[in-house]
Image (cartoon, rainbow, N blue to C red):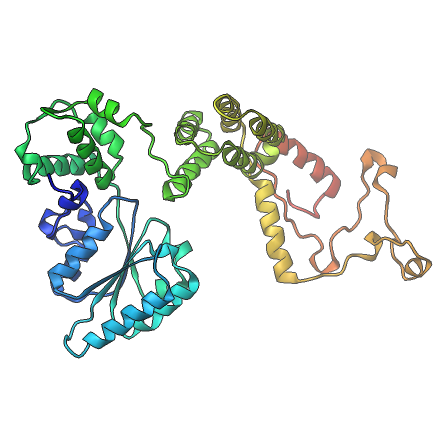
Length: 424
């Protein structure tokens, strides 16, 4: 038996054997055209683990017969980058084509490390291929990002996984010598979760746990793995995608979808406080004044899960999630503060009206501080019309009431107070 792991043995060497990402490398696809033309520009491959980023970079280098340098952002520093640049420049005398520098996990490079790449990418010392599981917009500096095209790699679908599975057991030099029987593959593909490397690791685990006849069935795969089905990386892209889906489902008043995404996070072992904090934000941003009690309940949820923890916290989170999803929605408070901030940025530090200023000293009183201020509680309905905004923006409407029973009622009261001064 070979000491080389199956994922490495099964790594394709040619594009024709590369599985998945047909939107990039299929016939007539953009990356395939670039490769076939031999005119390669720098780019970044963005996608989840195990979808073929490293494999694709190696295939491209082999196809174009370019020198291939690799750096890992985890173990390499600026010194390593400079050494590669030096080696690449020394080869310029022997080849008309620039070598390829592949940087795995480029999002882990610091700003200074990324800065050290700029000159070499700009003058064509090498062609950069970066690989990242994180959104390059947030993790790669703008000057470097502007010099690279970003290509998105997708998780392998069920058809891709099936093709990889069948191809591997039929062609791998070791597996094709074994007596393998395939009964079911649903659990195998479910646990793989669109990750080719994970699929191959599971295949190897099943094979190694079967000393004689190798059988692939759902029961055997589940027994061998003895782990959760949920594919969830609390520090990866999926973490942000799922919380985004969760919040948008609440905002969209879909309790079924919201509970599903909550379950995904619960099964993935997400921090209960992280989920509860997002519920507080959602209560203020998306429900707001349509149901002010939502913020109180979300805050109570946070306090409760901070004390309780899993597994009981899932019930508290479920209650809060369903309540928020079922609540009427309004983003009027969210929009109001955003519009107010823009107004402040536009108009600057306008002076506070004299009538609203405190006057704790005799001099301040003589200067008119507090003069003309009307104490609201001294008037009917606890309201007295007066100017509360700086003169330059007098009459500016910022808060616009949402269309829901609670705010409609409030808007009517405000209109009776302010008449035509503001539009609610």
